[in-house]
Length: 335
Image 1 (cartoon, one colour):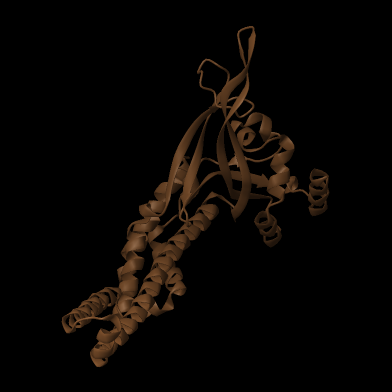
Image 2 (cartoon, rainbow, N blue to C red; image 1 turned 60 degrees about the vertical axis):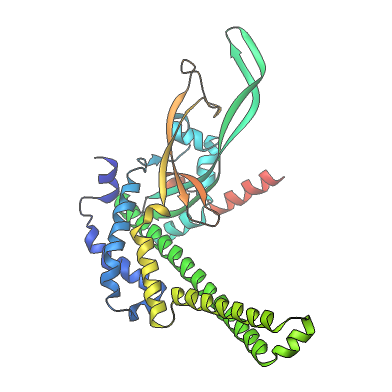
């Protein structure tokens, strides 16, 4: 079974999900339902995004067993956590994972997406060359912090559906941000138009007073009025591009459609390859001891955009630490 089989499942049906995805999208902006044939016009773009996201899921690794024993046997778990104890302590501290187990009392394990902040840092370390120990050797360390487990499921296909929904929702939020930016621009243009019209009226009604106050000739005053008129015309064209009323909804629907028709502009996943030693130091000498790992990295469409390393883990209920044990551990670490 390849990774797509594991993630998608044999009974996965993309087309059955399109209508649900469109409905979820319209729930974010119900007014779009007033636009003629809105669901039909969105369906093709939504299907494009779903196909693209499923392609991204192909970069997701097989799930790693996450427990203390795995730290010594799995190079990925060893790289992601500082010690065997950290594995169960960090994962058990996830509120989303604990809530998932509470909502699913019969589940003996959970599949989850583990997101992390990945940092490469240049340091001066110690290295042995033959019988000689050299100090102040430039090295690159790799560290993983800010572990988060927010997406959980009973199985691979279940988790896949949750990831797909969340990423589709993220695209919907991106479209809404663009719509809100348009609305802000439209509001600013409307305010600017009101000010320009007031200025023009003052120039037309009180031209003589204005000329006297600023020592302008009649020709200069008329030229100012013409400049204001041209600014009003430019403003009007900009407002027309933003749209108003039904035109504005048409424009907003098109903006949503364009986001979902071009998901690659907002979501991307790629693999970073590293060769590490047991201390999470990058090994540049291929003859030196080390293990090769691939880490998926996702670009998160936030402002500004962020990059997060991630992997899939499978965590057993029996390894979930009690809440009071976590509190005691936190007190010990704090002092």
